Amino acid sequence: MDIFNDNDRQFLYDQANAGQKKELFKNSLILGILLLCYNVFLEMSVYLYYYFYYFLKTRKFTLNFGVCKNYIIDNFEKFSITEFEMLGNAFVTFTSLLGILLLARFGFKIKTTQMLKCDKKGVAIGVKVFPFSLLLNYVFTMIISIITMLFANQGIIIPEADFSVDKTTFIAGFSMFIYMVVLAPIIEEIVYRGFILKLISPYGKTVSVILSAFIFGFMHGNLSQFVTAFVTGIVFSAVAVKTGSILPTIVMHMMNNAINFIAIVGEDYSLDVCLTVYSVLFTCILLVGVMEIFIFRGVIKQKPMETTLLSTKESVKTIILNPAILLYLGYLTYTFVKQIIVANM
Image 1 (cartoon, rainbow, N blue to C red):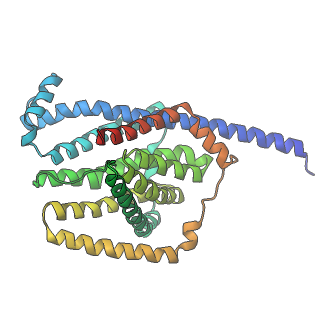
Image 2: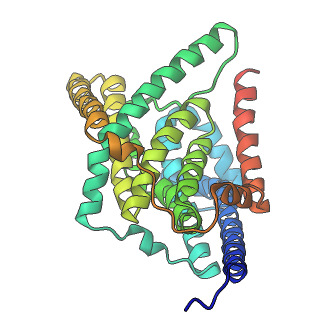
Image 3: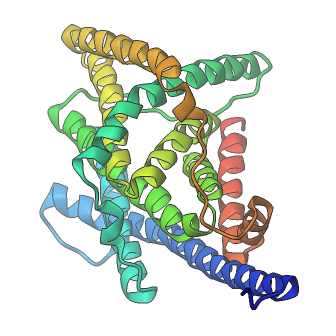
């Protein structure tokens, strides 16, 4: 005998729905705070890096920031810009990651180690999907290059990331490898994939995938990387949701950056062997990616199974209207627009 009538069921549903909406709002607030704090840590770590780089070059320690800054300015032409920037990126992002991990663990009781738990099967899924993500990256890179060229013909400069090596020293190449291939994939996947999916996916997997990809693309601060990172980010996030871990996406991210690193080294260091390896490897992976479109057509179109009572509209509204998320998106918009304005001044 069913003891609940329709009104009772509707009441219970409404209560559960309201509860999930409240939890999503709370998690969105935590996410926004974590992302904002990460950017604050980035800004603070830049100052620490000046002390670190001064000590690295002089083997002297001082608490006077002016001394460190003036030394670097006065001797900047002697340094490799690539070395300075890549070591800086590595130092700043790594220290900021430590800060946000500590805040997440002890401030909000988030067990970050769970994001990295994965079996061999999950990693294999990431490796298998990688050619398709690289194909998407290549296609949209070409599209954005054409758009950028058209804007340039009209006198409007669209800023792009520059990963060229100014001085072809070992330390410059090594520092680029450490940041670009090793650290950046780990840090970016934890911050822009791990935290977002962990906090948001229980209340909408599809929404969390799109949000993660959007923020991952937007945080790069330029149109070219925004589009490619957003498109491939959807694939990366879908893999993370399916496997329940960001370990496969870290591997995918490392593979993607490693291929780009080989091309940069081959071009800037004039190493024909690297250019040959890059061309063969890139072409083969792209061909596999094209094949995967037909082989995994059904899988590509497949949406994740949702376990939430919230509709997509309710989830999006709850997240986007969260004050912390609004503030963070406002900050990203400011930096994005600022780069365009500065490039055209």
